[in-house]
Length: 229
Image 1 (tube, helix red, strand yellow):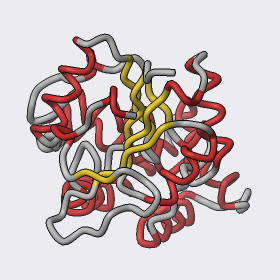
Image 2: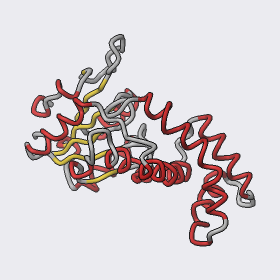
Image 3: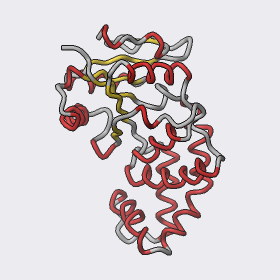
Image 4: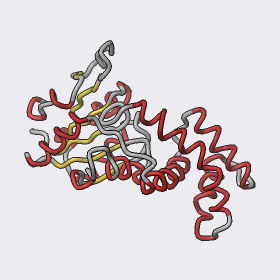
């Protein structure tokens, strides 16, 4: 059964980890407190802060406590869905203003364009919110890449190291899992995708990176041939 769809991670796969840690996270750290305080003054945005309280199990947290919770989650790199949603809102301001341009490796851009032309449906699955995913590709250094993708998935589909998350995605795509090729730089994510029935390919972009055990491992999108899986 041949591959019909390609599902890709972002960080360390289509885009550099350094961009996330050296550009996106510092920008969010700097601008998130003011954004949260502004949200607190608008009833239409109250659900964003309530989601943080719910996820932190602190229903009485005031605005400054919410800010402290978010700061701690960022420091600990916690994949909290409410944090990702707020980060996406803040990053949107940076992208729209031109302060941020999304990094995407040139080999990823070329391969994704070629795969779409060859008839593959392309999807993204990242721990960043769907909004953040659309921003990094929509305001990328290569221009607006969002027309390449047929859909996006984030932690609302489940965490990336859980088999059930990939099962849900396959169901959402209405495809047998074995017709989906998943790309990632994290072996635990690849393991979970493989255990759901998906085909997998690991990306190890650093020259001294070790192969991702149990998975075909390549250092560039240019070397990925979907017909080989």
